[in-house]
Image (cartoon, rainbow, N blue to C red; front, top):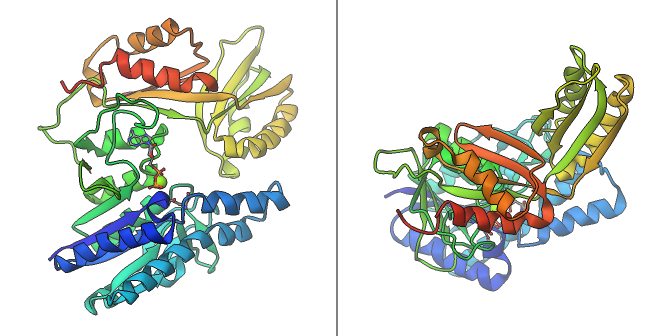
Length: 406
Ligand code: ADP
Ligand code: ASP
Ligand code: MG
């Protein structure tokens, strides 16, 4: 007997018919003699609808109320699945984040899980109950509902799997695994049988939304084996796991893109110690993450500073940066959200030269201008004009021969 956590995403629970299909998958594991904990997302499009509702009323809605509102989509799906399983004669019980309790910090809209209390879940599993937990939500120490950031149900599932020391965490979605790039963008994308935590983390952090980055971080930390599978077919699947010798060290494992990017430039900033700190400290105090940063070579005591933030946080960031720019006597602040980030990922990069050059040449051949570049040991990212995203992804996938199994 094993303990299995099964997470189903929005398209898998998009309507009651699809939820019956989910019930079949859950029952199959239960009938095989396993303990099953199910984690669900909201129905596809529901979280977007709730967010749009809040923004219809206010540009920057009260964060506490916003999180309570946007977490309601998951309450609908977990209760519906419990009703379906119950009507089929199975013991099932739904739990919201606070009922479990999934304790988080206070960072609304992107809270981090501090602790998953397993007492209630274990009590129910002992009674042979199928436990169904609402993904994406938690509760802070003052009993306020929090949410974990878009795609956060993946993290709920892995956190619960880690806390319960589950044998497996299955992430069911609308594709049958992790591919060399988004299979919905590039027809030649190839499914990976196995991918290491580190590569998956870079892929997730640079935009492959099939797993939320924090879920991969957590899976790595607690060594949770994660399987990405299709809800709609039994074929395929990708295991996300520790790097082992069997894994072929290909130069690249994947190409990713992220359209949730905005570029902010502070023009003509005095080039003196402390200026960068005074620009970025207020942003971090407002919990705004800065991604790529470029500072130009100084000319006549002044420089330009460009950085990227999530598009969703651009307005707030702009407001904060405008105030600091004025204080440090910069000339002006420019924003551009018509951009995207394309990245190539691969542990094999470390031991191969010329990878960056090949990336830049490929983009140049397509006449795509590179606005910013950043690199890590196993990743190179470029900011380009948004409209070239798909072209860049396909060209890079081709240039590095990713469609072929080597
Ligand atoms: P869910 O609602 O099940 O959580 P998501 O939409 O969050 O599903 O994630 C699945 C989607 O991730 C796929 O439909 C696919 O378009 C996208 N995706 C992006 N990059 C990749 C990749 N490298 N491999 C697989 N899917 C990817
Ligand atoms: N429903 C949430 C979202 O749309 C969480 C998730 O799907 O993982 O972001
Ligand atoms: Mg998702």
